[in-house]
Image (cartoon, rainbow, N blue to C red; front, side, top):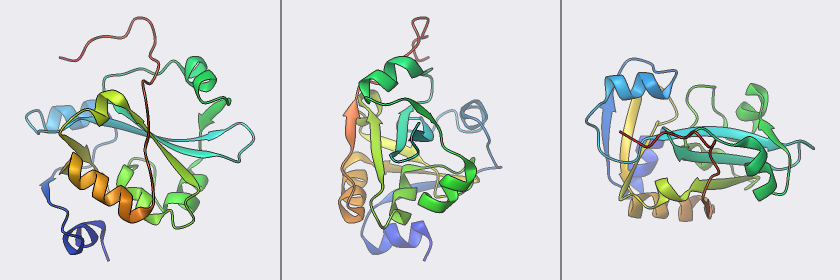
Length: 167
């Protein structure tokens, strides 16, 4: 069952927009300039000991202060490998999305959501491929997370000092 079929069966509404494959947030913003919902950057990260996994969802315009984030999370963090991404979320690089948490059956991944994203009324998500974007209401996201057994850790993700404001 595709993620979209799952959402339909669980009565989670979404708007789907197909587009060419996107590899960066800049690509997505160029192709989908008027699409509603919070634009996100999704990073699969792991602690230095390779024991704790996190899916970090932040506003697409933010540049993370990794040192400050590590202090906040009480762990040295790094990007997880493509193999770890495949093992834990069954995803390929470029298609990372909070919807991948449906594949985290053992609940080994903690969702870390930037409060700037969580405060929005809708969120843009890849449907586990980078050739489409779904816009899902916050209520729909909350229902999805409840169904998958994931509770978001909502934090103010620290950014580099020269962080630009969104356009």
